[in-house]
Image 1 (cartoon, rainbow, N blue to C red):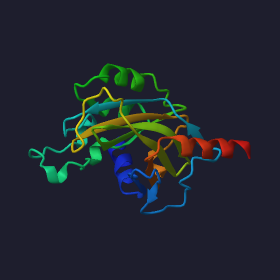
Image 2 (cartoon, rainbow, N blue to C red):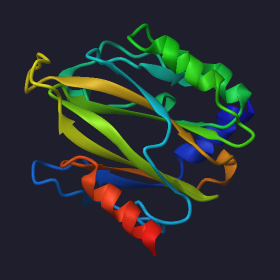
Image 3 (cartoon, rainbow, N blue to C red):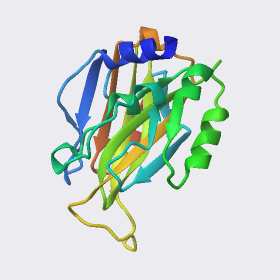
Image 4 (cartoon, one colour):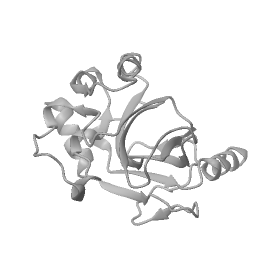
Length: 212
């Protein structure tokens, strides 16, 4: 299937990994690619259209149906493991038709979000991560080119009235709409960065870039 081939190419691409930052708020980098890790440039967007789904279960929320392998019950050792089927680009209606959703709050809105995407001019990014239960991720922005894309998040505390445990983790899936029609077969790099101090730093870099 064409979409599977495209995702296989994407999964084999060189990836940028900007790890989950600590309380200092600094964003750390473990590897690099040619694209900058700054939210700047002509192909940069602040707070792109997106939907997020969250669950305390260690199980997929959104995934590509033909790629999710069956696996035994998870253990604490693999609580951070994310399947390849839970990440990738959705670039056409065929890719969109393969998406499957768990029965969690917001699923109907996520399906509508996918259906309303114009793949002639837009591309969806599916990303899944594990987040401490007492925190949430804000999508700060995204950058892209014909050969790579990068997303930027801010980690912030959830409201005080949300019950949570400091040693528990949730699973969060984001569907992000990029205002560009990307060809997944051309993608050779991808990455994601998370700041422990929210989106302020990414927002400043974006605004500085727009003023140049």
